[in-house]
Length: 413
Image 1 (spheres, rainbow, N blue to C red):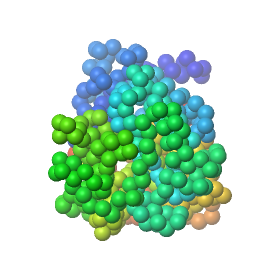
Image 2 (tube, rainbow, N blue to C red):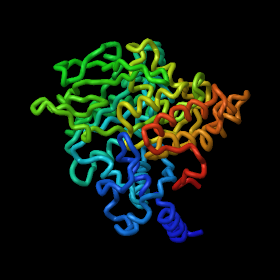
Image 3 (cartoon, rainbow, N blue to C red):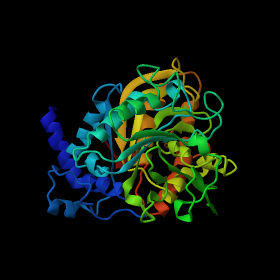
Image 4 (spheres, rainbow, N blue to C red):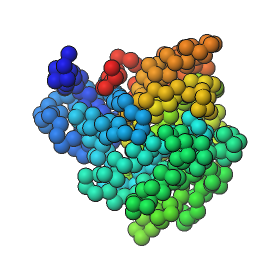
């Protein structure tokens, strides 16, 4: 089947399933599933007419995953953005030219355990190339909780043995490249204040730290989140948005999160992906380790619902961790040279674990692959705690799926 026929078939499929509407609508959700297509997210060059968009608007039962081959150093991210745009999702309408964008990476572990820094560099590059002229700020951040990690003291943005083609290229090296070009890009290691409890800016507290809410939810999570001031003077609350010190108001819509996990196995929770990566947004230290414990009972779904959902999830599958993670050594990682993106973190984790990670784990001695199955329903399996997390989104009226028939993959041979 040649490229033109493939595209025609795919476009017809999307039109009659309502995929374009679903994936654009889901990106604008906050506390309920969108019922119409937000004009701000639909690509200008989509072939759907207004009448067609209206006709398919009620059909919200498909999540799209876009896959590209890349080693992180080439134009793979640009091709990914182009692929999304061709099917109606405009990356540059997910983020505005003056937004503050948090790239929520994984940095607790060195070598292949953290998000690939070449990929981080490529994502920042497409952001600063915003067609409207980027005047916002990019914040590369994670919270290794000030504990565990490669040196038993939490995460780092400056690992000397990084996950990149040039193993010396740390996250902060990437940040400085863009700063030297005049861009507002910064790295913020939330570990540095993960044990500091603070109040919101509106309460007059300007210190960096974590806000801890009093309620302990049914999943066992006590919601907490970072609140800090960047080196450029931007006042950021992960939950509330960007604080204006003059008007004393938050602009929630100006803060966007792009979730950038590395796909790897996990000794306790079986798989680390887009959902588990949100463990870097609460403070484990200030909540008596409730945050980490709650992963197995659905806590990351609670964290997403009660703080801030990502506008996009980009899965790093350039090197995947097939050993008993979450650490992943240079020798123990498997080079796959792929990335994948979706607005639905749960669909992305389901597909990536089943089709990318587990086939490689099955080649190793042992029987760990069974517990990593996203279709698993027994306690202790990946599928079990993922569904508990997804239930939290469903209770809030937010679309997510772990049903294979509801997942449509673009770009995978």
